Length: 396
Image (tube, rainbow, N blue to C red; front, side, top):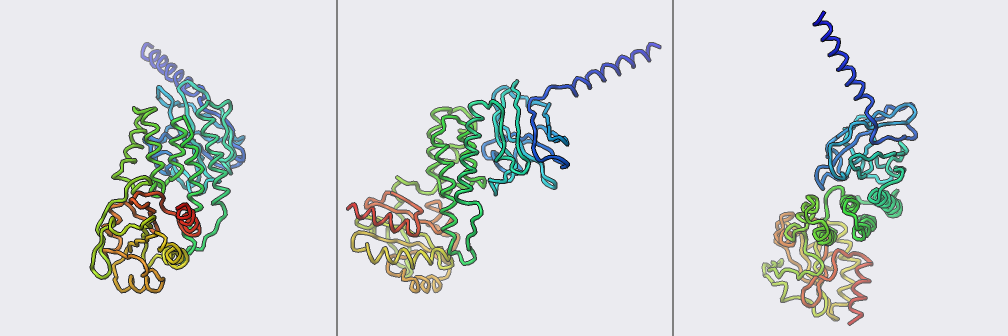
């Protein structure tokens, strides 16, 4: 009898704890519209470092919730954290990993970042067909208001500059048009990050600028963010990670920097030092290749007219080619009329020493230097470059 009684008591205790666990209060709940008749699950993800924010297949999956037939859901296993934590709520898709985040189409993105504080309760609503776009939090905190506003900024910019755009990239002729559109989209997120006084919304904007973690075209943005947050929150681990990314050795030459005085080889095997051939007023360092279609177009339609118009007024052009074949290089420059200005190459192709020294990996690219060799602008192309040079030299 005693043994049976003890077993009964033990069973009662186990059942009681089980019931208590099942009755744990929700710390996040809400409703997902458009979920009727669908097998949908929501996942709660915690990025464990800055690079994992807004990055697909990264982040720790903390909890999950089944979306019921009525669209309702609840999370009942709260994160074990003392302070505010950045989380991401992701809509599970059939055949995808729990931490799959759709980052290539902002309008149809399946996740949303938000801040959660221990002991807080969040009520969330969203539409399953436009999850991030429709995501809302009842009575959001200041940080979550900022994140929702950032979402609106990103959605609007994406729809304005990128959604539905079709570029003809087969010949590369519209590659620069696409890059310009991406930069316009990024600029809106950059403006938000630069103006935000809240760390986490600013860092989410930082990651949304480039989910691929490629900031080669906007390195000055990294530097500004590092300088801002290392003063405001120097001890935060993500600020330290941001500033590690912002080290000069990790970035291309910045606007405001003196361009390094390097010795470059010409097609005739001669060499020249950059400082000895700077223009009297302006120098354009152009990075190109004979196999790069947008580079060739830029030669013919932009650089030749600029040279013909402004060389005698103080403009110098120095081109560096990512070439491995001297004959192809020479043929391209002659056909384009690019043999008018200084041309250099180590003929080592993608392993070009010059690009390594200035820490550039992507072409077309350019740096615009003043008469002292200081970078005053960079990566301006097409008509915008022609206008920029005209305005700059027109002030002289």
